Length: 232
Image (cartoon, rainbow, N blue to C red; front, top):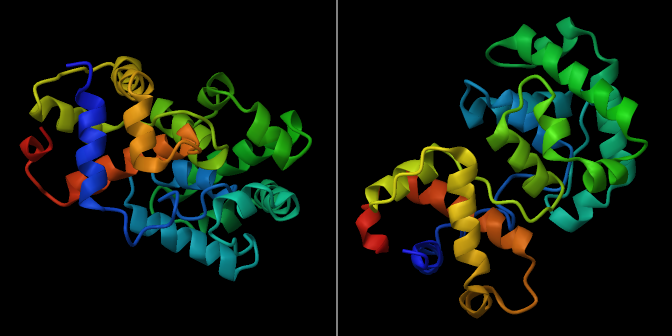
């Protein structure tokens, strides 16, 4: 059972589910857009999140990022500028760009941006110093969302798990309801089989990238409606 996570990763890797996706899967990973997306996606479809972000770009509130994780992660000026823009907006103006639960999400995003500016002096300090405790203290962010921020925005070695992960493992005979236990099960499966991970990605691979792709593969596999037992 201990090698189940790495076997799942190997079989998902072979399916090439992310061939048309951005390298880190999350659109504009490495940028401030990730944390915005984590709040906006609550009780909403990702398509609506993309429409909101596009609307904010067209209005000049958000910049257009490159889509390259390293470049966007290091783009100090534009990321910090975007945070300042969100923090300075009125709730009504921001809500006009949001699809679904406009006022609640606008309020939460403005407060989040202001808290980031209050506690961190730069975008670099945010990505280096943000932790799960700080993120969970923000309205609109739960454990899954916090881990998405740490992995897809900050580039940390954090494995995101979700309902797709839970359902996949249940179908394979492993039922772990607790979020942290489910996450730990997959992380141990990777860390205890690094030779097999390196055989897939190369020895120079960043584990943060592996975890980002692993989570993404699980999501895309679930959406494809394939039989989970084909991964055994």
